[in-house]
Length: 235
Image 1: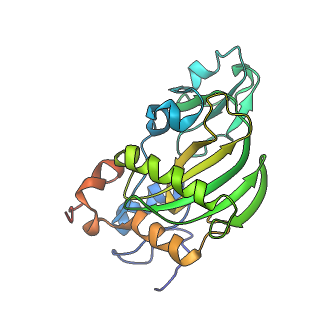
Image 2: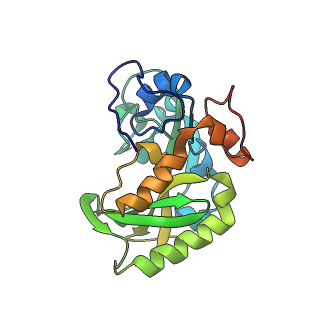
């Protein structure tokens, strides 16, 4: 495949794939004829407690600013402000109102990024331990079997709510009040995710599907694509 770094208006034709930030993607997706697959904003908040290990609510930034208790607050997809734990809502950054996820505060002993294609984990990587960058391949990891078992159950039960190509982050809770050791951290766009120590070839398979030609867009994925007005479903 030919690779081109875009700095302005696209100079490649339709039929391309995309990897990069969401702001630039919004400007060039139509010109490139690309279908950008994204998990829905509220997917994490709709998961059963057994898969989250914490209470999560879909809300707005204006509502989050009224919080009087510590909470983890993040934008659901685009990184309009850094995801972080805030003692109260008063410390949230200024800016326009928009959707946010508000979560109970938990400590992640280890976090893993999984590249998922058609409900199957193709590859993955540990990316942090106790909030510190600590990349290590999933293949051969001491927690590989546990991660794959948890992911298999999650995808079987809730995978229909995700695009066919997506990144799902899961983690091991340091002190699980729910009694569950493993939980979902979040889901992300594969075309805007660091693969860390995952197998790059297998990760690329997922990335290519997550941001490819609209003419190849599967019918089930139309609802996960922001720009589909002229997309022709493939099935």
